[in-house]
Length: 378
Image 1 (cartoon, one colour):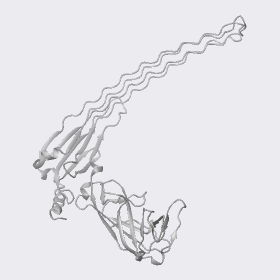
Image 2 (image 1 turned 60 degrees about the horizontal axis):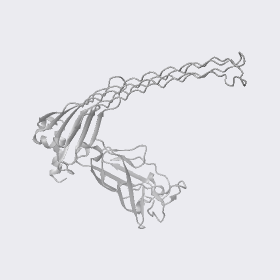
Image 3 (image 1 turned 120 degrees about the vertical axis):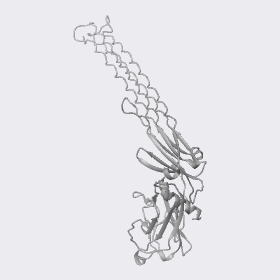
Image 4 (image 1 turned 135 degrees about the horizontal axis):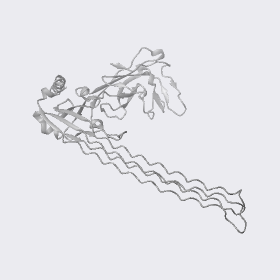
């Protein structure tokens, strides 16, 4: 059994005050625990492969109160706003691991094939501290059933190109067969081979379709055009003489044209290999999508360069009230680029029908073990 290491400190049945804004911590005497329950904090005895969940431990004490590791609304040893001292909780798993950064958070094994037969079991006990150090409470256990709602869809490829040519979607190879487990008599097992290697997926029933996406990259966005330069300022004639006008500002330059967006990449390809004895039923439980990448957006034209300011003129008087030069005209905004073209969808899946023994030669013993466990009523 895998155990979470604990450092044991304190005195039996002493309530240690934590920060004023949080609950107190209760140290329990293991001999006073008459019953111990361990379960997901959701209250449901379920887990989804790879999906972390918080564990709750609930101890029923010989004074009739109950103490929880998470629920501070319970009255524990006559105290409210109190939780079990986390250092006293010894938690074990039959599979998966603990999140090292979060207390009492379990990370189930991500491979659904590994827990299809037995699910997962949680175990917990309370360790003694102080005068009761070295003692242990009754052990609580919980058997958890796997569910697969968090693992019914996977997407590969996609993203946005970082160069002028968008990548095509990946090539995915799927092998599928029926699977009768102790929890799901009409399941389907899929082995997927693609970027990153192989992985396993389970559809628990005919209404739970597995969806796989092999998308082409989206085209690179067009770069915006450079802004036009400001026109030069008009000549400053303020020191030349009275009423001498300043020079007119020069015109701004035109903004540069935006570049064109890139074309999206073509969608990926699927090779689907089905157990020939139930091929049509298996194919109906697969949704395979291979869209082309989206078109890259057009680059915006550069902003027009502003006209230069008019130059200052000589000192004004009643005969020449305004001696400043005229501002220059702004340039023109650059033309926008053109959007790219969306990528074409990938080809239709290539379907093959083969015997289960050849499709799953390396997994056949485990498949047979799972199905015999179901047949034996395990």
